[in-house]
Amino acid sequence: MSSDFRRWAALVVVCLGQLMIMLDATIVNVALPSIQLDLGFSEASLTWVVNAYAIAYGSFLLVAGRVGDLIGRRKVFMAGVFLFTVASVGSGFAQESSQLITGRFLQGLGGSLSAGVILAIIVTEFQKPAERAKAMSVFTFVIAGGGSLGLLAGGALTQWVSWHWIFFINLPIGIATLALGAWLIKENDGLGLDQGVDIAGAILITAALMVGVYGIVTAADFGWTSAHTLVTTGAAAALVAAFVLLESRLANPIMPLRVFRIRSLTGASAARGLLVAGMFTNFFVGVLYLQHIRGFSAIATGLAFLPTTLAIGVMSAGISARLMARVGPRNLLMVGLATIIGALLVLSTLGQTSSYLPWMFIAYALLGTGAGLSFLPLLTISMSEVATSDAGLASGFSNVAMQVGGALGLAAFGAVVTDHATSLVAQGEPLQAALTSGYDLGFLLAAGSVALGLLVVTTVLRPAAAWRSARAVQQVDAAEVEAA
Image 1: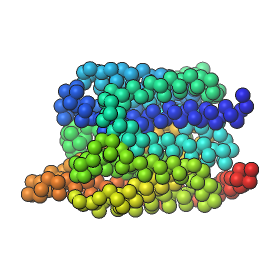
Image 2: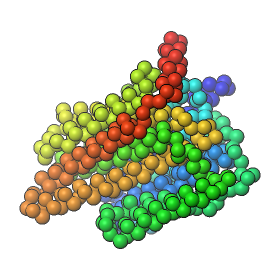
Image 3: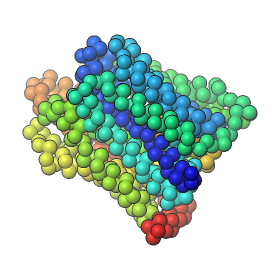
Image 4: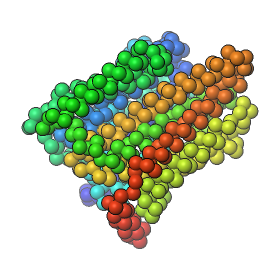
């Protein structure tokens, strides 16, 4: 088996692992009403089907990435896929609400283990700029398109079979990923544990993220200024401070703080978090608008997002990589984010009688085009100055920014949307009109989040001389690939 074939086949394997994670991020949302009816969830407890997963997933990403650097990324990836697959089957067989919540927590833990090292595996396997750009294109399609595919799959399975199958669908994917991963993924030479393991640091950062994500996802229930929210977020901040103090004093920390001084990594990760907050809010508000205002069925709702998925697929089929080689990642990113902002502003003008065609269709196609132009440059920039030995940690950090940004944005924007609609109803506004106004505000807030991401790109990610050199190399490599 040639080295090139193995590397590209391994890319497919890790992307299968990422696909399970991204599908799971949205596939459950469409099935929540059926799950509530079948398992007897209350309105308050139903949110924990989503929250349990989010808390576990966001809490272990950083540690998973660093453990992959230390003991081997394939080991961590395979362990994560195995746990995710087993937990998916358990969730599918759940007969009580507590069983499903437990299964969702274990799914989140498995997802964090595998997602924390996937980007690092790709970066180390594809070190030539042109090859890395192509590999990242495939990966970004899975990331950006998986969410809308999840809505479609969730609607189809829930409507035609049952909600249990949104979890059982992970079983064949997981088995294939494990079998092929053991064969194709090359293990990295880990830094080793011989100098001691920073157990205290691992506990502190995991606890900080767990408490912080818990505070964020429950803020909508308790209120953003409630004692519960202030105490949990304050405790998370204190744990982060203690972690930073500890890591600065250790010779062999689990999270070397030097990584977080890399401007390209921190800036791109912040922009990625703001972008994902806008995208998650769009999916959430879009589903509610289509079902509650336009009366779409579950499967029709999933189909409505298909233009986004198709546009991302088209842009990821080499177009974004070629454009990035010509104009540079930062310039392409700004165009992509601006396109997304425009699409969300169009969606914010929807009314009670707005038809799907043409404007919603156009907006979702533009949203997919912008996402296809944005995710590849974001990943390229974030990992451009990271040493190979720290790739797992950087991958975990980037994923934490995405997960926390998405959770924070969705929780905050969702609360604002709900409060706005409730206020209008209290003032005598008809329910449908109040809901529509709230959803329009949600799209507007999503556009604002992406606009903040664009501001970060233009102010923090300034084009340095090193980046211009990297782009020059990319252009040469891309030209050679096209000529071949």
